[in-house]
Image 1 (cartoon, rainbow, N blue to C red):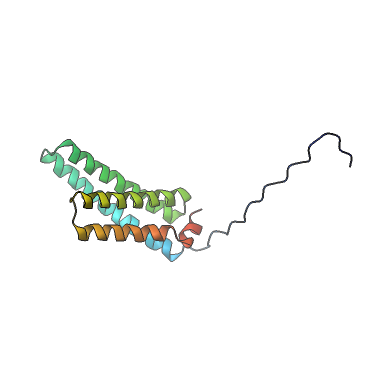
Image 2: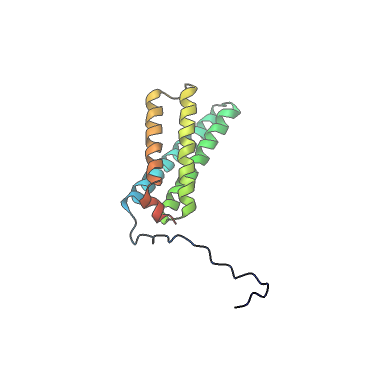
Length: 144
């Protein structure tokens, strides 16, 4: 073939083959989703009660804003639990962000003496374990 000044055609880029999604939902997806859902619903209920109590007792605006933020974070946790259960990739990312945010908030709460050391270790351990489960290969393969 003679070179007539044209460039050779581009080669297609290699894409690593992705493993297929499992046919059945792995047990780790069930466990992570149920834990996120259980503690998310619990957070919504407690947060709503906290907002009502803060408003009824005339608390400062910062306290009410913090309670509303806690309710919104718990709502995001419930949505993330459903997303992980269904297998949305973004649901897994949201779940990881919610767990990281909860860990940061527990650390801040412990540093400012808002929560006790036992509560802080329990919160860090729980959300760390859920974060570890979300980063696992079975949950990662399920959420595509």
